[in-house]
Image (cartoon, rainbow, N blue to C red):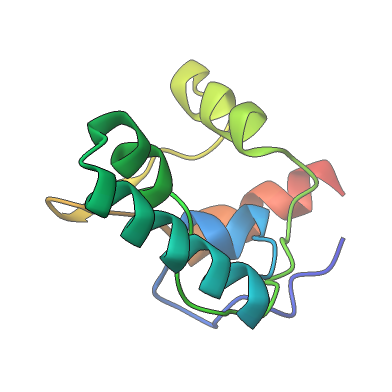
Length: 107
């Protein structure tokens, strides 16, 4: 496994650890249209579903560990993987040193 994508020190977020798929401009535009249609129709369930999809294009982000999101969080809960640090009410991160130690232990 490679950890070339990790900074030297500091904190990393979930997407930097397990990766994230890219979103094309076409997908993002489609998602924006879905939100607009749901809002116009007043369908609260459809609005909620549509708002959980990315509305801006973004490149893929490779992960540094070969786990799915579900496996990652199950391991965090069980203590198998490093515990996160809360940097704010909606910001969860992990110390880079802890992630590097995890990578070294599974390599």
